[in-house]
Image (cartoon, rainbow, N blue to C red; front, side, top):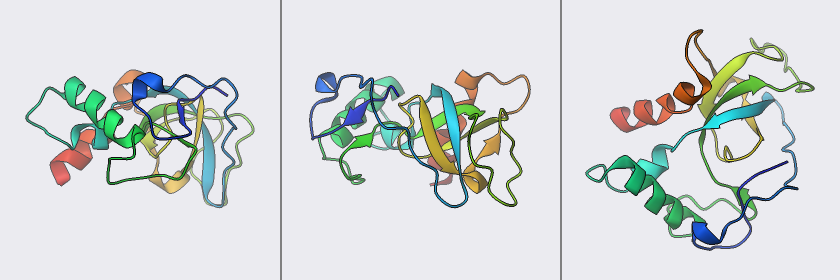
Length: 148
């Protein structure tokens, strides 16, 4: 699987695309999602809302990748925290889950800069008809920023 895996603290310009990252394994109440689009996420814009979002997102990824951000996932970890995609073929469908394989969803979870991500199905939202995957990869950060 392709992913931007951080194996040690480094500037993002030094983090290359891994072509053999492990496919995440869903745990209880989790589904596997094929990521179609990944957004510039909440902790990308948290540093300074006064700066242009792309500038901030670039510089916050610098912080997390270098271990200077408040959230420090254990190594190796995949960058990115917002996504839109489809429930992957072969994904487990936990008891009570309202999604089926192929359903369009979006959400927020660490590790979205990859081909696949796992998420608790209760944390996902259905991607509305007519909304593109690119559009769906960003609403979570807007919700979090304005509810903070």
